[in-house]
Image (cartoon, rainbow, N blue to C red; front, side, top):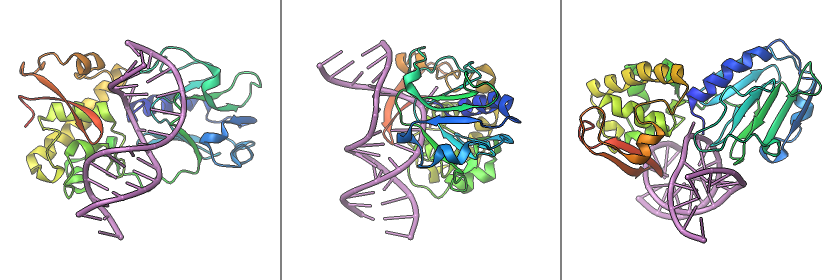
Length: 254
DNA sequence: CGGCATGTTTCGCC
DNA sequence: AGGCGAAACATGCC
């Protein structure tokens, strides 16, 4: 599902509802806390933020957690028309949240999630999240992952350590920094931490401009086909690390 | 039909 | 106590 980059795209799109007031709401009670509707109706939306993969509508203090297949539609328009692992269908029966503002017929915000692993929260606790991927520096990265013995790939996916990286972006930045995803995070030296921080700071904005997490060198097509590595021609490999599929180059990632 | 999927939470075991 | 790996969650798609 969406990673931090997709959350950022939706945060940006949701700026158009800032300044409006929630006049009505509907929510799937299976993915939201009790009393949700009463808590948000009547609240002015005063801002929209993103921390890691979480988008927050300030005012009603709504937290949007996208899970694997959550997506957002703003005023009837989907900023991301389809996710990689879903069809282009937009089935209203998959709606988990509808927020109405000025228009009583068209929801200002729809949270649509076929797989229903996403969640809608009130006043989410963001203090548990690690350093946001947009704020990563070599020093902060080392502090966040340096004491961890787990594979660096797994630690990058741990939202308590670094917030916003998902499976595709983690593989991407490891590819760019030349680090084997199996390596214990604690085994990275200063130079490697620097290279990893640089990849996070430099490559993710490029992917964001191109449209999101699936616009990297290790695109979904590459992840599936595993052609020779675009950097050195070595075989790309697929392994399961931390329960997720990792794609990496057996040549330049050491 | 079997297997896989951009994620998070829970459980059992150190 | 806290880190780690595996399983569970839920459902569409290839």
